Image 1 (cartoon, one colour):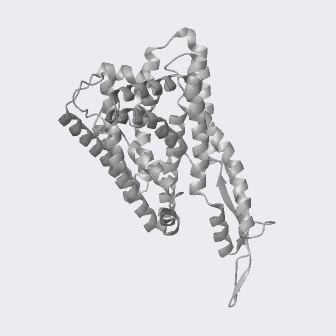
Image 2 (cartoon, one colour):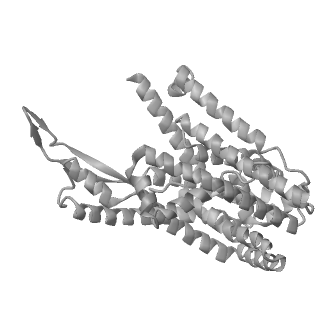
Image 3 (cartoon, one colour):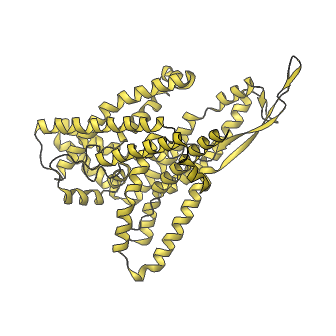
Length: 419
């Protein structure tokens, strides 16, 4: 409580928090501005019947439910980031920019991701509009109306990307994560309202069990998110002039969940991709688009196949993202340069191999945990049979992870202030 009050007593920190709150408020205002010609009842029915789009609606902060000008949320930017990360594995020049050119290289890499976001947003906007027209959620549009709406929706996605960058600059948390966080939190009042109005006294044991399970999931999220394997590091003594350097011991923390919530976001983006392709195929043939859309909808409506595929994608993306962001050989080289070594392991390549084995083992637990969290809504729906009682494990994971990250950032500001 003392720290919370201290936040508002420090002018610089108070200003940062108010700026972030103001930017999130702007995001919520824009998510309430709809594009013209929307049938609200049909849209609500369509989103409730399509689990993946319903989940995407949460990620967009309810912007998709309103068919707002920012209906795509930060989806196109996330997709662009995924593509750029994949390209680093194909093109050595991109890998060099990302890993070896420091902050300047990262800024350049992000700039490329920003450029790629624009065409992806335009294509996704057209795909969604075509899907909604085919489902009679919105009336048929003329060519001019389609171009106008695609342009507006694309501009909305670019605006959100810029908003995320402004939030990140405040160093209170990651801008994209905070926008997703705001979207999830904004859906809580309507969810609670639905549970209250759908209250059934005969289901009290189910409600109690659901509440206990929710607490257990939150505790598990915090436990896994904060869990780490500590690798002992020793530094050899070095004599320079009359002074002795090194000779101390430390440790290298390897997090159990090294990838955070990124694999789940990647998996959702990939699951949306077939539907996007089905709608884009309307450029070639409307009959082909209808057939592909029907095939994708049948796949998404099969809970068992959908959940299994979703789980597998999350596990694979956890390993992929960990491999992209954590290079054992590079860390081994840095340790060797600084005179550090792992006791019992030779410096250099053997250290890299040892770290690789450790990270593969710890990542397995993190990947399985993320996979279970991702399909938790499906599991609770199957067990309880109640549509409203879907324990959103992914939403909980994102909310808890972002909240912990914000606390860390604020705590670091307070620590600097104390010193």
